[in-house]
Amino acid sequence: MAQTYVAITSPGLEDLLLEELRKMKIKRPKKIEGGVEFEATSRGFYEVLLWSRIAHRVMLRVTEFRARDQRECYKKTRRFEWERLFGEGANVAIRGVVHSSYIYGSGALSKSVMDGIRDRYAFDKSNIKGPFLEQTERGRSSEDQLMLLARCEEDRCELSLEGSSGSMHRRGWRKCTGSAPLRESIAAAMLQAIDWDPATEPLLDPMCGSGTILIEAMRKSLSMLPRLDDHDYGVCAWDNFKPEQFEKLQSLHPQKTIEGLKVIGRDQDAEVLKCAGENAKRAGVKDFVRFEHVAFADGQPPEDGPRGWIVSNPPYGERIEDGEILRELGEGLRERFKGWNVALLLSEKQRPPRIGSVWKERLVFRNGGLNVKLWVGQVPE
Image (cartoon, rainbow, N blue to C red; front, side, top):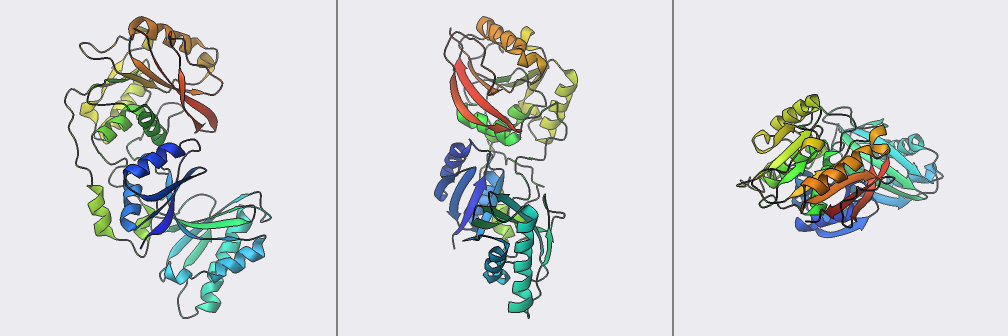
């Protein structure tokens, strides 16, 4: 039976997530603020959990109702047949999120929901042992704990059960990073937005840091799962979890091999390049990514190959704020990378460097609390 789910992403990336889910042939995906709502059977739900590279979380929409205050929220929560969802002895963490509501604060919301579930079992279904309930401001405290998110905006409340166990941008292979690391899901969104072709176009990140963009590019190109096999999914603790179906979907896409693939990461910081190499090894793509200790000012295009893509998230700080790095980048592109496509993720206050042609805004979204833009252009011949 199909149920309603919501996949959550960074505001501004909803269209890319919608496109991703449509490629999975998900039924009736609908864009909402900060995500995509969709209908699916357990198979479709598991596929989104396992294979989405842009979603941060995937939730089962349990119930929704209007509640003007805590008392009404408690009453309507208590009416729901929670015994259909939680088996005996279930361990459930409840997190509240409140926006512009007469329910004053996330703690008050989560307590109303917790009391409603508890009293459903205590008074209405006394012959069934109720779940262990606790309030939380973050995530699960153990792998077997279920996560129930209560969200109330004005007088509309939604209760959703999290299947993803925290943010899915954490792939499991990035154990060390440089300063201000880029989320893996943001890197995936950047690559999807530019439509890079790994079979014909080299990919170069001249300021690669810990290698996030390149490793994400390789795992997708080789049809590898976004996250490592030992990733902890909250759905595995659900009463109706289907492990055989879940495991079968992990091998849904056979791993590819691509001849002549050129993916190169460069950085002037030798230590962060060492970190990038370790991340690539854990991600299983060490043999497909070449890391070079080269500053952009000294870097040349790869030899004997076609023009391709330069994709980068230049570092923030004083040097980039005063425009020095972007000026160097523009000069180097004009002098040495004629005909190359370029995609740069910059803060909204920055303008892309002069390359002799018009830049286009491909994405506008928030990253790490900052408003950012993905600029795409091509260096003239």
